[in-house]
Image (cartoon, rainbow, N blue to C red):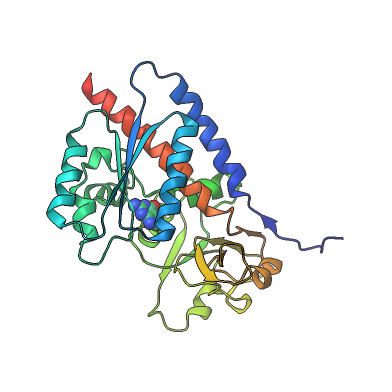
Length: 299
Ligand code: GUN
């Protein structure tokens, strides 16, 4: 028998599939050129290889054209920028994504800011960060934060008036998520606290969260003692932890110690099968948005 307080495990695969079905249906109605996205990977980071492959497969499954470009890890800044520029000018490319992390000699921020903001399906360009800041819905919002909010919305977990604590201040997740959740919006209106590796007495802050979001990239960092009973916990982390007994020699674990935290929670996301599929679904949704924006500007 399940314990009376069994947590509601949010099924990211199911929610992502619903979004992908909506994208697929809309793409099917497009006559002529279909939306197209390019994925750029620099070097052979194993996690990036698998993420980019997944993005390509999902694009195919919804009818979005995609191509992966892999450059050697020693590609120069100028060569990479020249490639990005060529994709910026290519009319059949609606979306450009350069997978992070990039090798250390490349300045990620410079590369992200070189992408045409209208093709910036990752939402990392400073123009799109500014639009998010200004609550201008024309811009692109980074896929993982967008996926987290969509997941809360489609699970009926209200954010208005709640205290949301985000652990992590990255450009990819923490900062844009805080912007989204604090905006004047039915699925915003939260009181948001951003914590990070230098926050003092982190547990005393996280224990006040109605919704706790872990995005720090440290396996099983969030323990039961850091969570308020009845909270919702969203785990953005996907960490590869060495495990000689696992088929691939590693297992995937989130930023949350799931087994000890889950019994305390009202809702919790698993890893894998939580936020991960939502990120890819929102990338498809952003690519369709880029296609629509660019088609409208051609008229
Ligand atoms: N690395 C981890 N997440 C992301 C993402 O959403 N976009 C890109 N470009 N790189 C990532």
